Image (spheres, rainbow, N blue to C red):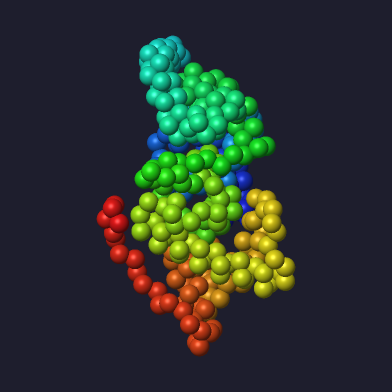
Length: 299
């Protein structure tokens, strides 16, 4: 979860607390953060089975060095009862809206509404209404064993990404993981399998082009260093190992390495890689780097 700090052994205790806090507040973070936030693209939030595994192991007992807030427990109970009452009142409308949307997206005539799809949808709707309990766990486990690619309907066509999808402003490692594994928690497939027709604006298509170019540089560096093609089936661990190999052997100008390319935003890293490639291959044909214009929402 914290690859840049893995060598800082003196911070292991603090990092464990940070991880526990992220796991404990995961639902709140998902509800409050925009879907393009880089935190939601990390391994912890992408891998639902890992999140469920860690939730079972989070300890919420009294701590000898952390004091309680002092709020009487019955206040929290009243608040929970009020929230439950509101959730029950909202349940019929949420179920009706959810099933209507499901029928529109999947289509009865197409035969895509299966028992598993209905069960997972019901669990999701109950979760949104605050009445799920642990009902969502079997659905998450099943999706890991037998993942199904989700389709999004907009602009009179089916696409692999929703219309409001945004590329997260993130570092190369997170982008690499999204490239190979997508984000199952948000229903996004591996980004290497999409195309520009799955993106709703030219700006997003331009960003996808930049990501694709960076991945080509990275993959070429990996293949050149290892002497082997990339495996057809990629695991999280293998992807991380190959990323470390590739990022360490990218063509970067001398003096830039200290900035740790892996910690930069992917667009900045791509610019540095292009500059290094042109410096090492002066006769190679390449497109000059141009700073992207801040386009409007409809471009």
